[in-house]
Length: 499
Ligand code: BES
Ligand code: MN
Ligand code: ZN
Image (cartoon, rainbow, N blue to C red; front, top):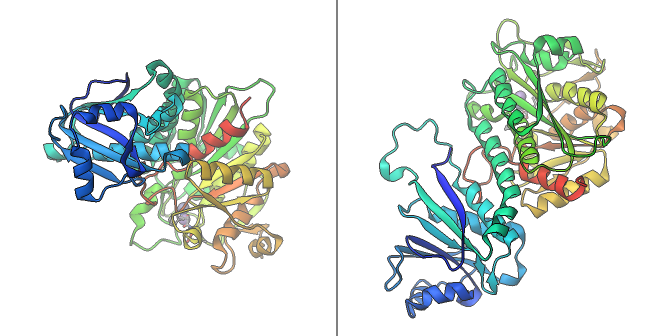
């Protein structure tokens, strides 16, 4: 949880005290309002820039404590490079860079939302503030011994804009989205002794405040529905499994919903096919897919998205006790298909099998997109830079690819094909839960999921094992749990599925 961030908008020209943040383009080009304040300091900036070989290249920072003749304690200049070629995600990044410099300061700060050719639009100012908010996030709930000079200071940060009312209006949806990302990060960062399935479900019910209908299915309810693929995974744990169904109805009554599903394995020991000890602590993040869905539902509801959306998350702990599922066990999924368990560590797909079937049958959605930290193999293939995308629908795949690029959460499409599908045919049951060897491990996992997509509904699977946690750090994310996917899917909805 972040130190109290008091982030607001003020009108330009703003009083400049405390810390001042300005943006400059190539060749140290400032906007008019910025020029006016720094004019008071004569050629101080030029001298400092020359001494530091600073030119305003994109992403670079010139940091001047107690600059002479300026009334501020500190002047921070963030370079934006070529001002004409800026994308929204660039502006968000600059907000992150600016915020990255602020925690060390004690005093209030003013950030001039100005580009070399004049004030930022309200939209740009909102993107900037979103970057600041996302960068400010720290999960320090369990740090009880931080020294005073290591704690984020309680201070006010003002973004100076041309039109405060317009900026506030533009920021409202951005705030909804960044709160969604932060909810997802908190859930992923939380340890598994605190965040077990019932507690995860309880936290999801907070969405009711935003008029999201939240239904929690317990073990008895899932048994009734025949969800033995999911239940088999949770049966070795002291913590009972749950499924949470979230519904936001912001669209027309008769419109079919869009559906988002998440793997919510609160902790993945591997089960009887137990994982090695090294790094196993990371498996508290094996619910990043489900966390994203909760954060996304928050974003959609909080910004009153004009769409009908359902979120379905399967929440279990994959643990080991005398009742744990064994390799060789055969379970009957809700779809009726029987599954031979080859490896109890391939549990996420079992959870999603029932969630996918349930969602298709119950909601007949326009599409289903599931997110899952599903395979180590996708990290081997794509590292931490791209999430794996598998889809039975070219249009949906393309929309996801474009949205990902637009907000810097890229996805890379991987193949599905009958040749891979046959690798999961089972000797004893309809299907087995792993391929025969380790080759194409991310693909055979996706093929398994596809067998549980009913009625040829457009479907996409995002394998976020490399991006959901312990991922590439960026200017807008310094958290282990990244909240990856919330911004991507919100963008997908906003661009293509809102009336
Ligand atoms: N949760 C893991 C995948 C994972 C690994 C996510 C590392 C993030 C980081 C998943 O349940 C798993 O164990 N997958 C196995 C599948 C195998 C047994 C077929 C894997 O990837 O090794
Ligand atoms: Mn596993
Ligand atoms: Zn797992």
